[in-house]
Image (cartoon, rainbow, N blue to C red; front, side, top):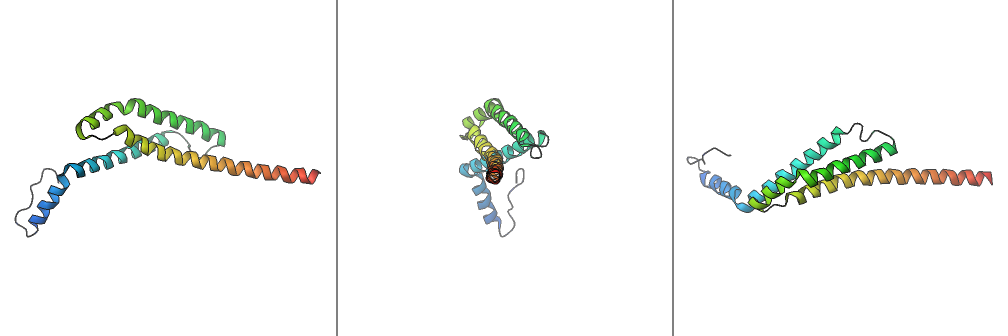
Length: 139
């Protein structure tokens, strides 16, 4: 709606004007900015994941190495990449830029860690059960 005048000839002009006033309220703008920044971090995270070849299609050892590399990228972004945005957003609209980034990264990396550890746990249990059966047969 930026750059357009409010409609004045239609019967709904009063409703449209109220809608524009509602959009322009400081609280709503802050929420919209927070949503946009969060979405931007989600896209940036996906870009980092996509930059790591075969993130999900490798051995367990390779998955761990790649996950450690991903965590390193995320931490580097939080440490250096977010510094300028943190100052800008905190000073202008009182939004904690790093906190938004951390929340996105924590959820995404946490999900990957959970899947990796669940896979490791299942593999460990299967190996343990197999060894238990072999031990019983040998006895």
